[in-house]
Amino acid sequence: MGMFTRFADIINANINSMLDKAEHPEKMIRLIIQEMEETLVEVRATAAKHIAEKKTLARQVTDLEKSANYWQEKAELAISKGRDDLAKSALTEKHKAKQQLDGLTEESAKLDEFLNAVQEDSQRLQNKLTEAKRRQEALMLRQESAVVRLKVREKSAQYNIDEAISRFERYQEKVERVEAEIEAYDMTQNQDLESQFRELETDENIDSELAELKKKVVNG
Image (tube, rainbow, N blue to C red; front, side, top):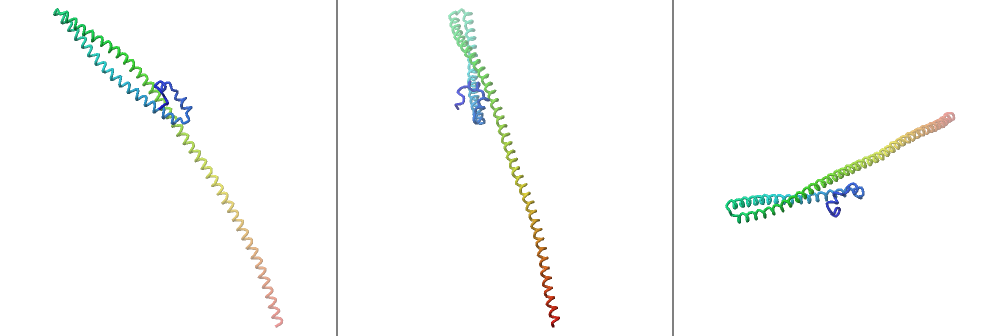
């Protein structure tokens, strides 16, 4: 993947520092975890391979030990029968088996040392992976918290806007009611004034008609 070039890079990596410098830390931590998991699989596969080799060596060691004991017994038998020549040949085969056994024992010891190192490295890598996953979880919690806070603020802002609009509408309705009352009052007042003028006009008409009637009666 290019982020790490070897196992030691992962072990020595400062995950926190890498994430602090990353433009997108959530993506970076996913890549780190992915590479760690892939590396851990490779390490475990290597360990499994060498464990199988160790088992094979163990069987070979057992076989060589049996062979060495076998030729030791044959050498003793030949000596008991006065056959030093056969005893010498048996001891030669015994020494061959012992030489091979020594080589396998040395190889097995080196393999044990390697497996111990692999086990330690696997544990260190697992610890790093656990650390990375813990950091990933912390990042996810921070992101979720930020999203929740943003939604709360957006809701709060929306509520404030709605509340302001609602208050303005209530105030506008109140003003309109007052204006309506003023208009109604003016209309009523104008109607009363017009009624008074109509009464005056009616009175004037009646007086005129009464005067005409009197004149008619007197002259008639």
